[in-house]
Image (cartoon, rainbow, N blue to C red):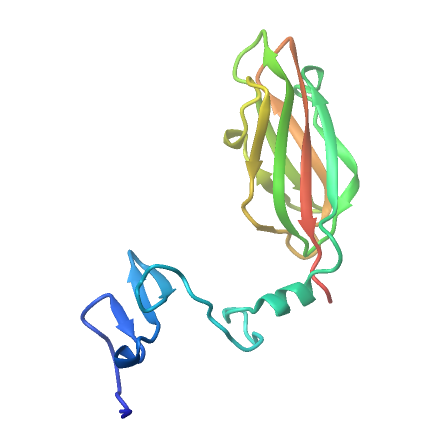
Length: 185
């Protein structure tokens, strides 16, 4: 038996489709829309058509078709002697690229100073785009600090990666690795 309902809202946080036959659930979990199995023990797949508008859900096959090749990377080594003098890559991040990941790798801890910082930007023609702020890395300990916020590079604002070290130190070194994606045209 099926019925048509004009649902403008439900009072609870769970809507089950086909509750008599153990159908899937659509759930509000603290403001996050979840698609769950009937037992509410695991997420389930959501299928959709290819997007047509900017706010549409995108399928994996659509996203894969929009990304060309692998994720290129730009590597910029740095040391304590670069404090106050930005390091600029020779390679550039294209305009309209999406920076997928920025990794700041400290290979020798910065010592002998105070508050060493690392700012990573794409140096655009008119505007610099921050892709890792000074608060996202710790140069005083050996290791990796990863920023995985997807950052869109504005049209016309692609350019080299600029690493600016701040604070003071008398020792320390590392490198920045910037990985980005280039959408297909």
